[in-house]
Length: 187
Image (cartoon, rainbow, N blue to C red; front, top):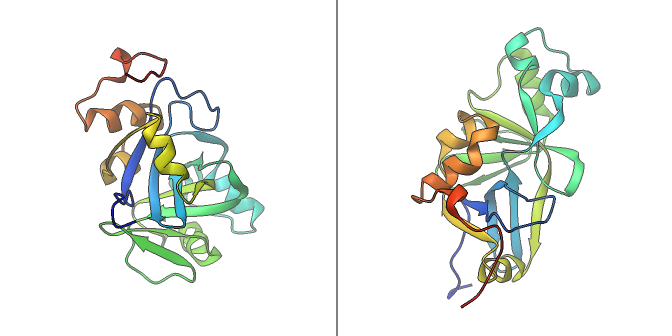
């Protein structure tokens, strides 16, 4: 991929014309992108569970109402039954991929147990599932104008309300998505 840009630690912002129901009006944080493909977490699509409900299912109840009420996102269509914790915590967890400027995605139970105890990462987003692209697939979608790209902003990931993240990510590029056509075209 020497000639191809790397989009790790970037947002993929779905163009209004992207009709795939998994990604319509989505913002995906790319956690890994290399010659074999890409992996990311959709950060703006609410799942049907709160963190408290998920922790209960895992026999990790929490007494902290703030933790229990945190929303979970549908991180993408791949392995929607598997949990991924996107965070900025520098501690070592059993299974963590570190990327970008201090971000990480952890898939091991130890981070959820810490969150249930109130000792988890200060900033965390729990996702069920992830988005994945095979080698060259993301580049093809970019060439088809399916996505806008911009370096990731941790403020959008961790503090912007879910329903505002799509426009907030585009605003980082100076784009107002409401002014773009909802169909794709090529000149």
